[in-house]
Length: 408
Image 1 (cartoon, rainbow, N blue to C red):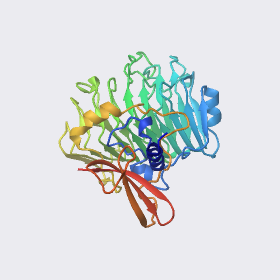
Image 2: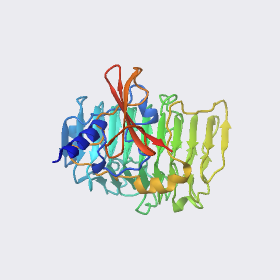
Image 3: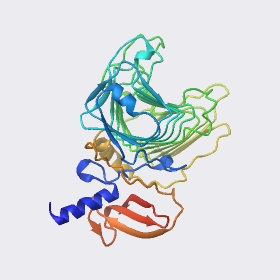
Image 4: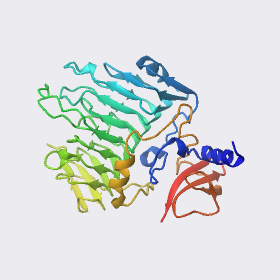
């Protein structure tokens, strides 16, 4: 290998960016953002201790304890009921190309549905994983991915298909979460005649399971960035209770939203800031789903496509505006970029993940010692160039921050 190529690879690895191993938008920060950068941020395993898993049992064994582990899903892993893990921390899960977690069981027994549930877990990264279930069925079953009381979670470039109860739900005091570049859709027709009485339960994401979740007020704080609610999604994109939720640059484009259904559900004590999202042929960008005495909420739509700027408020709730910095992309780029790159589009190879060297912006209070600029391919620059730049800063406490910036 030529010296120049070695230097290029070294620069890219030092940045935690492996462009030859991943297909990404120029607006992809390739690291936790928003709420996932507070209270210590999310580092997962830092790509330490790789483990290849090819079965449910191997995945179960790998998801244990607090020792850092980088879990690579290889091939199709079949489930006939939810895999529930608790008390796990410091893990990164990658889906290798062509892999998936699959539960195609259609049953009236709720316990046979669902794929993965994380309870009281912390510092977890899930990237490039495809979740496939048997289709929506209203029986109070399990979800493709479900977070219970779990904190500091980053879910990125995942593809969620045909969840029985939901595609990806979050409840019971979970907090400090980022969901980025994920795709939600339904490819299987919904199953009718469920005991819950809905013949079309394609309700994608529930954030806060009920108005009586006593441990959720003040929690469920989440950033959704560059996510795509695609064909078949009917409701809950997401439906939010309690949390401060930032929706930035998300794409809503589903036939179900042209005449029926709704995109964002407003629940009890929801504080939602919807910024530069694209609602394409969406009849109902939102729906008030509060009732009785529990009607407090505050929702802001700003600079979106498909809905004018509007503020919705009831009760004593006050406005939520994100305090962190997350630039994102212009709204006129959302449909093109998100529809091209959202989902399991990363071409990760075993042992060569793309999150090595995460340094969350805003976590360290140390001073900047030096700043270097690189092109997306890893070439060092004398100064920032127009378009995408990768910035690497050495801090006085010895840490290194890596981030992406756009120069217009």
